[in-house]
Length: 116
Image (cartoon, rainbow, N blue to C red; front, top):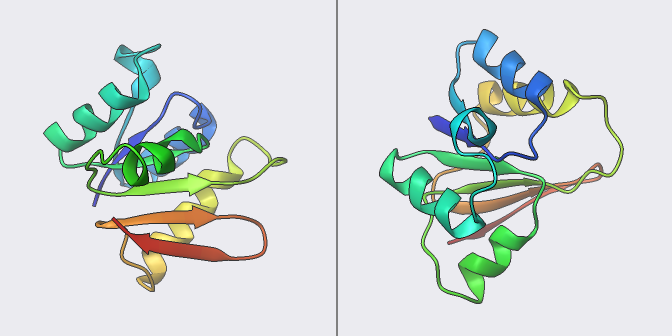
């Protein structure tokens, strides 16, 4: 699975995922400040699932009818910078969830998915 880290996804987590062998790009490396709609278009063009802390992506998908390959939305208020990367790495390696075709919402109590 190819990943695209939104600019609000911690760089430490991005680097950790990259070190673990995941194919991931970070918007902050070359496209900082672009609109969420453009992030979606970039992810589609490169067949990447978006990882983000921005709830606006759910609204764009379900209210504005934008299409996306998949969104992984972290709804965490407090965390160490590398923690989201470690959590996502473990989740991907577990093979328990499919991320393509879903909005996946991760909070500290549960993981919810909705088909997009």
